[in-house]
Amino acid sequence: MVLPLLVAVAVALAWILALAATQVRVVDAAREVARAAARNESRSEAIALGRRVAPRGSVINLDVQDGTVVAHVHVLVRGPAGVLAFVPGLRVESEAVAALEQR
Image (tube, rainbow, N blue to C red; front, side, top):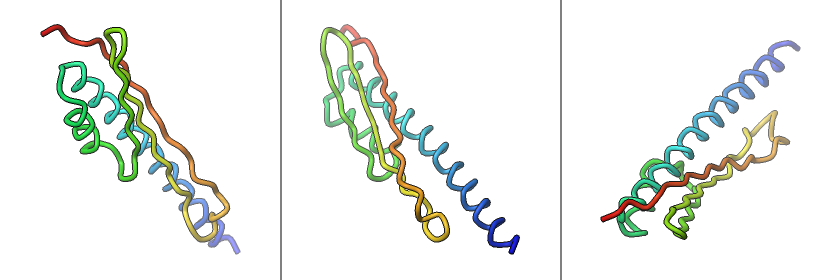
């Protein structure tokens, strides 16, 4: 009876580690997009750079206004299946802001 509980705890811990890794990738993607856009790269180039870093299925938004660039990245991370199928997906998101560089 203890073994199924240990397996469930191990799966839950692995999912928490996956969430942490996803958060790091989302933060890196937002920062990459904001930096690229601040360097006056095109919107599509900046988003393409962010997609290289972001987890699959991420949504990347870029807004430029008043001399600043704001990049927002979010992704839904599904819960583990099986014993922990009741756990809902969690939305992981990050926002990065950068000042536009002068040419």
